[in-house]
Figure 1 (tube, rainbow, N blue to C red):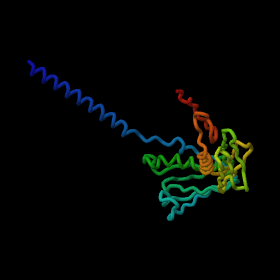
Figure 2: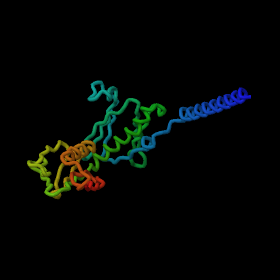
Figure 3: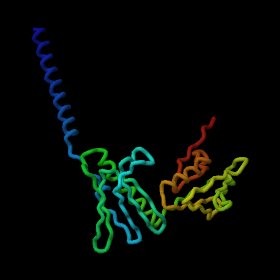
Figure 4: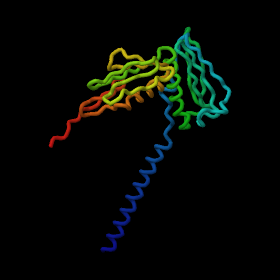
Length: 234
């Protein structure tokens, strides 16, 4: 009797295990056979004004600045505020169109089912959109100095001098292509046509006095805030 019960129990366990394995494989298959989702950003057409000139050079880059740009093509974007040069992956296709007097740019890739191409689809479109905004309107990033005695001023036309509570003033050379002004003693305005370079310089300034949560003092970039912490009381 005991042997019969043991056999039935074993059969039930084997059946349950087989059912679980089948369910897991079906779940696995449902993920692997799902169709690739198209890029929601990449498939959007990019409108740009008549004051922007785009030129796509199809010549492959053989001596790239970084290895990832090897065999990429080059897109030149010119506008009132300057020029940008962007490397375009060889599998990314650009189509320039005219619709009711408006200039449109469509971005596509050779095979959207390939993960790398699908990722670069939206990334390329976003980089081109940022470049178009940079050469037409430009970018402005405010930097706030919060603290007793914190001050900033422009010296010599190309040097930013700040008093941040140290025994000496902090002096930083302003990079080429970035305009720096101080409308208020504790406010710095950075302007440029390259959002990456402008924000990189802003966070270079921020490193000298990173915001601290107890007194909420430091250098804040843009609308940055920091949650206040209360000190431990003995």
